[in-house]
Length: 158
Picture 1: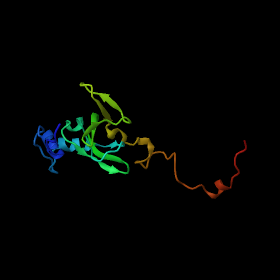
Picture 2: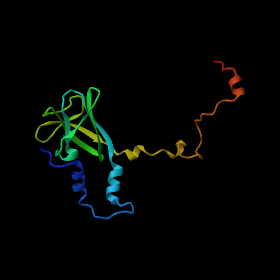
Picture 3: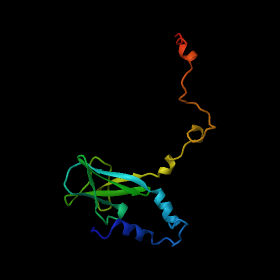
Picture 4: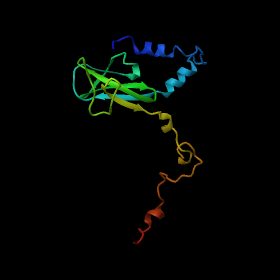
């Protein structure tokens, strides 16, 4: 599991199978669709160490991705396509898994962490009746201030 190449080389090699068809912006439609489907995903290591890296099925276990310090933790934000991924941390040259995160055993019996990345387009839509994007929808909730007459009314009797 060595460092075979950069992430950019891996992305280019991964996309080499797509036809060389460019859109007006110079980006292949397949690549543009893949890039719009990626989900920023934060991985976190909270158990100390000086040099902390992560690798996993998201990069075919091929590259140690350095993690950055954030307070007492180490974090990295990866742009991943929706799916389930296994990963492991390399802390001071020792392979480790985070016990406080979901784990799974691989086919060789190793314990790895796992993360499921969900497609975010489902959450990016607003319901048409919410009125968020549409001025014609019924306004069930407003920020209109009550008038003076409404403010002067006595509260209802129980």
